[in-house]
Length: 360
Image (cartoon, rainbow, N blue to C red; front, top):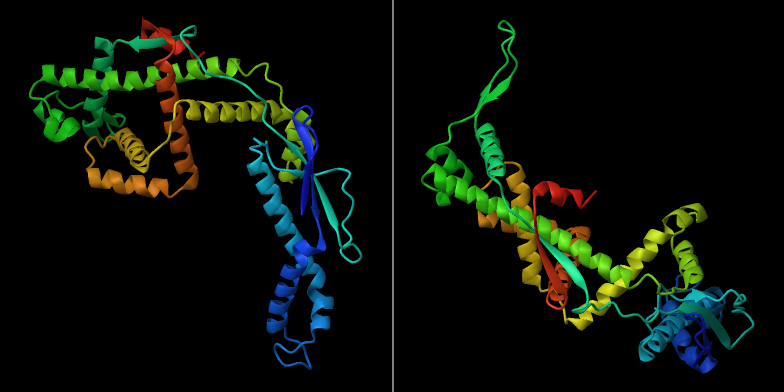
């Protein structure tokens, strides 16, 4: 077995894997013996089909399987041993001819590989990032109270004879409403109710401003990737060869977005190592419960039992896409929080209206 790699040029190289008869003959013989033990042919008892006939019928397929396995294992080992940060997967070299399994004994397989460029996306005290605070207004509190009184109000059916439409009569702002909204933790009077709502709004606004800080931080990171060169031709070829349904037109349309996603993925990997970030199972479950709680709240269910939230969260985590999304969100949150500790943060208090303009 011999592996050779050409010199990296424009982040690309060719890796050649040479396989000699001594590398595969023993394994091929072993597998053919196993095939013979199971082979069934008219005129022969099970396991008694002549070895020569078994080799003639199955030898080429067995040889191909053994060669594929050997190539894959040693190519992966070469990448790992040389700490190559490859992009995509190795692709068969364009000059690789057809392998003649009938007449050749020594086989040479050539692959094109591409590696990630060197870059540094770490931020420091020279970088300035805004951190916004939105102060809840009395109007916000009034609107939330109005929403609650309508949600728990009395439904009045339409009356065709009187010509009235179906509408909701708001309930009173009293202890009964406080209990429906906050359960056992309900305040005793309207002042306490307003204070509790203000706390809820502050938490909600804090999530919004945290999200904005993440956007601004990501933009600062990605700006450091703008001039980093990538092996674009290899990446386009890899996307087309690994996505049979994708057309060249679709690739040309979406490639810039794909490249940005790749840059962000590589940047996150670097920052995870820099800040020693990982995500624990308990954190994933807790985050899933938060999502579940918010979803129930959207339907007016403010006091869902913890057991129900936990069960709902577990069902959510059985979905691989949702699980992956939660882990990625947690990783990004931890990266942004770590960066907040090293950059110059500029505190800014704004109105909800001015904050919303940032997204336009």
